[in-house]
View 1 (cartoon, rainbow, N blue to C red):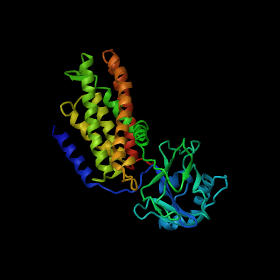
View 2 (view 1 turned 30 degrees about the vertical axis):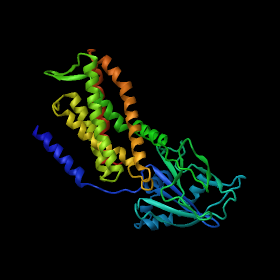
View 3 (view 1 turned 90 degrees about the horizontal axis):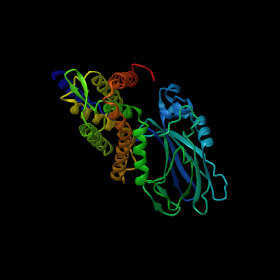
View 4 (view 1 turned 90 degrees about the vertical axis):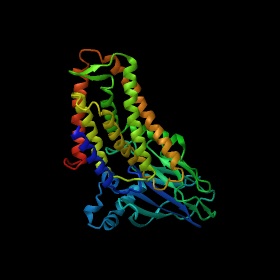
Length: 388
């Protein structure tokens, strides 16, 4: 009891003190395309880690000054963009990019900037945009969650202002070419888009999925004098599962909302390390139920950190705050639907197997041990003990 209380206080202390700000989402790169009186002008913004991962360019290894590293490697990056990004008019004629200066984003120096302009503007104000930047499934480093967002702030030719938060197009693995109306650019902030993103981020978030599965393993059991015992019927097992999952949901919804609304920022390395540790803790309790009376509190506490984990992929929407409340609600609903799908698939199987003689020996114990092994590696990796 005392040790658990100290553990809880220590986590809250770290959670409160270790904070950092971020401006751009980690799985996105950006294209600003604005229309001047006689030409188009814009910039690409890439995460420094993506440049290193996809292009094998470590700008910090080139020079201690990151800006110098960006300048020295600009030609290679420009060449990559030219191969993976193109503009065409309605006759299929290419609109080439003329490269200008480079630098880093002032609000978040982890994002590198590559400025460009084009000669002329299509008379009908329509361009076909093809964008495969970091979106090639054949690339060994490919990430299914990566997106490329095109933003239009203004059209001076038509004296129109759209604002710095107008996301006109989103490019993904399955959506690489789109027609763009420069006069009336669309907005992609649809509820379906962010609902689906929420579902994807729970399904592709292996640490969150593993945590839920480890939790579910013993929701069909109860702690007895000699360890775990099967719950007697469907209603108690279902109620126990609903209670645990609801606590987890409430907790991660709170912190997801707080982070997305920028009410609080936390150190993402610390958060991801705690998420890995949460899997270890729950899996250890599966092997021997020592935290029984306070299990609900532990689930709630870890749920808070999982919420910050979700927020790391949607909470830092620097230029999409106009509709942030709608985005937040739909993304969160998507996360819950993705989570519910896992519960619907896993719970009935565990319930049917809970009374079998080998359930604990051949399912709970091996899966918990496997989870401990995987999560321990993640923990060592995320804390820097093991190199990534």
